[in-house]
Length: 274
Ligand code: CIR
Image 1 (tube, helix red, strand yellow):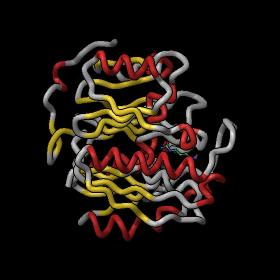
Image 2 (cartoon, helix red, strand yellow):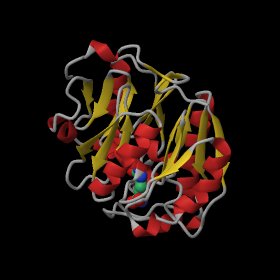
Image 3 (cartoon, protein in one colour):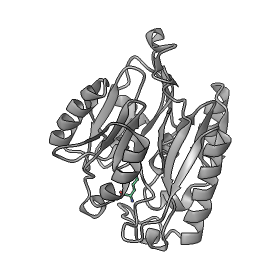
Image 4 (tube, helix red, strand yellow):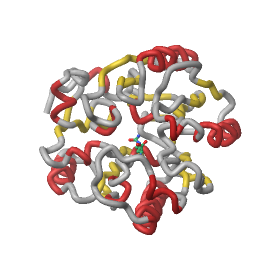
């Protein structure tokens, strides 16, 4: 574990702690989900498998006390279940992004009316590219990881949007060959990050307490703290044990088919405290 910086303890955002959520948006998978973008071939996901995992995810959010708005499937956009990539949401407002993969750019148009209904302020990234999967919110800053999907121009434009919403942004680097910054990390509480060894080594989380995902279980790094619990992908027993020993209430969710589409648990929802 890394250094514990007590200054983060007890930091709150508007509406509560930064992992306290009472509202979320998800999108139901379309049968075309099996044609989603894949960087590595880990075998074909099945539509039924993705649906089962998605249902379990929605139920877990609801059990954690979150009101979930389930959007209709978008067959033309196989990856549209990963609603976290085309937008960011905060209590103060939402930001529509410009996803870095051409096949996903059109998803934004389908989220725009939904977010305009839910938020008084909806900003639009003016230039460059950013995927929401590259954006990690911590207690005192919003970290933007440069990646194959998030360009420097996009990250700099996002800093301006964040400032409009009263958020402080910082640009960092996603490890090479890692899809998204948050593929390799998640916030566990105000002071603690679950992180892969390779991202931890970069030093971006110095000052945080760090729980390092055991070698071979890197996919577990994309976990999701929601209220009093941490959702973690099943099949990572050493990570589950570490989190349990650290005192977190852990909920293991099936995510193998979603993992075949390079997706993790944070990507499947947009969450906020209304
Ligand atoms: C993609 O390549 O865009 C999707 N197949 C997976 C996106 C996962 N999103 C995320 O990690 N934030």
